[in-house]
Picture 1 (spheres, rainbow, N blue to C red):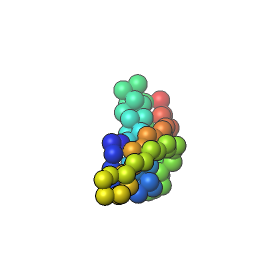
Picture 2: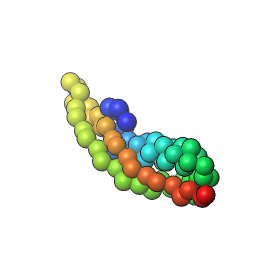
Picture 3: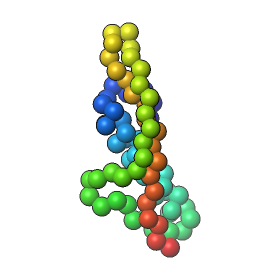
Amino acid sequence: TGWVYESKWQCCRAAISIASQYSEQACTIAGGRPDPFAGQAQRGDCSSQWTQDADGNLLYRCSGQAAVWCDQ
């Protein structure tokens, strides 16, 4: 993600969701059928950085990793 005024949890959730979408696209391009995660739960890894703006508000930037099952 870019720098966002969200909680670390929200930032990581968005980053893992983006990574999951990339994994699904890669599966489809390879000729498979992606089997995304069941329900609303997001699974994956996230790393984050934080900074503060001039008013002291926190901003987070997150990077996620996720993989979906790819049925061939």
